[in-house]
Image (cartoon, helix red, strand yellow):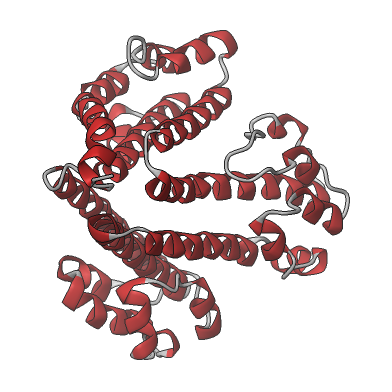
Length: 365
């Protein structure tokens, strides 16, 4: 089979959808709506009209968000079904990212109950409990009375091996941070392996997209955790995602064990992402200096804004390139998740009574 026959139908289908999605008037109308109910009503007649049905029947914003998750899972599966075996398997790896987030949410509920002894019964109904990629006993995980019971809920899945490196005692004393990082790193290993299964233009596009994406995540990890949270070198090394240019250069130059890791990072970034090297250079150790902490937060927000725009530019470039590759599929997923994120942020802002200006600022429109 040729790349044209592999991708012609699905890419034509997705490009038509993308053309509709890129109209942001829906977001403006939702932000201008005077209430949450009226903002949700703007979803009528869109691809999100099922969300309006959920909100009208329950009045529950969290149930609406659960339906959004269900729709996202269905979206990946629909596209996966139109693709040949190798790119379809890669889409399954991307779907696993949604699963890892769902798994972490379930483990957080278990932790709240088993370790912190907080009531969770009302929250467990907002966890997606169907199969995403692996068969997981979510109810068993959430209600596990012991650590072996928790692991049993993930038996036969990659999460069982991750959990085996921890114990009830370590989680009770250290929290979930290290476990959640280990789950994230597991997925990035699967992503790297999935990219290697692709060939030709598909592999080149996936490598370019996700190498950049990992670089940007690692820049934020270093800026946040080295200065704001003062993690020592060994813990920084464990938090960094072991992929991409930034991770390799940070290790090669000893940036993680430097007395001033941000200064070292600024030098690394200058060659690959010069637009944010100045913002990184301005970040200072916070200690107890509230002024420095607030200034650092502003600089990190500027960096995040740049990173978001960098992703958007990358996907716009892909849409203008080879139409017979996995690029259009990846751009479609990105745009769908971005659109869903905007809708979540707008509805949440309305729920908390934020002004249109504040919501617009948060959404980045």
